[in-house]
Image 1 (cartoon, rainbow, N blue to C red):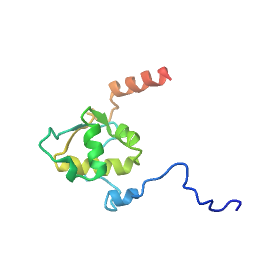
Image 2: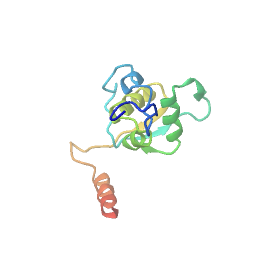
Image 3: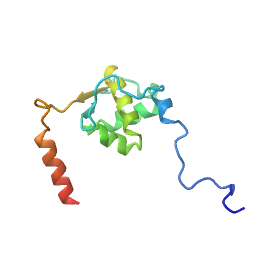
Image 4: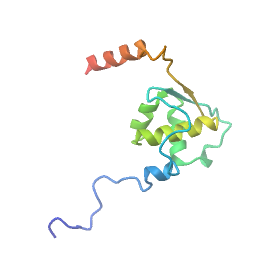
Length: 123
């Protein structure tokens, strides 16, 4: 049957859970969360991760090493908005620590800009 259902599954499977279901329908985080903010795990073994949702388990595992919000989003193939909401919720519950970039009177962080420029040059 041309252009129709062939009975075979698609080559790449998509998540069975829609992003808005992961966030409970919320589209904005409870706290301002820059995409370059760094996130580290606050669970040093005293929290049973098996009680967390799969998304929170994955974020907690990834953040054993400090990662940016954008990096978490990319590694988990999760939309940035969804990652922000979930990470902000986890921070409010004490599961992760968020280290926001310091902006001096609205000026961009020169260290961040230099790291971006260095990364672009390597491409």
